[in-house]
Length: 275
Ligand code: PAF
Image (cartoon, rainbow, N blue to C red; front, top):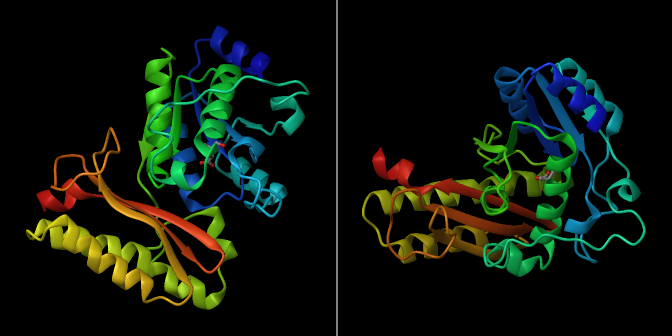
């Protein structure tokens, strides 16, 4: 990987990088298209990163349709698909991890201890190896995006991290590789998450208190059978700290279980405030 990257750099060619865990969907395709537009070369990584899964999470059942992913990358004009092995990334005796403090303990970090330490570590390693000018990540994983931006700033990494809009299904469900875990009825119910967030943001835009809007959203989500809420909150867009009153750049964040599937989503509050 480094040899390819160095050979492109010698020719002054820029590299755009899209980190993924595979099971690519239209959301990933939109990141790849953006990287294609901005750069001379595009690298996509597919690596189901064991360090970001807890002991009882879905690491072993995470979908790995590699041939399909490779065909999509080829069709989108990806120059290099980087598909390292777990031993390649974490050889025996591997001991170094990076943790973006505080931001990593909030929200998803509270429910998935160690998750963002695994994410930050692998993204740092990938950035070091691939050495792109730009890396593209989806806003769907808003906390992840915020943490990676902070890591890049704190560690003086030269990359630009570009957050790209969430792609949604027709009913509003954010595209995610984990949506394929949902049964037909769960898939239908899953749209309630985005609908509730959107309705809460509208209520707030019209002047309702955040606490009341979120109370309604909670009620709507919990009316879905087999649903459970890890969290739903209004947060500052940079610090991710909970806020009680709307402010510029604020977001509503949520993580919800539908049956055995954990879904996350978020929505910008200020966009609806400006409407
Ligand atoms: O969002 C993902 O797919 C993963 O968390 C990432 C950024 C590829 C790191 O493993």
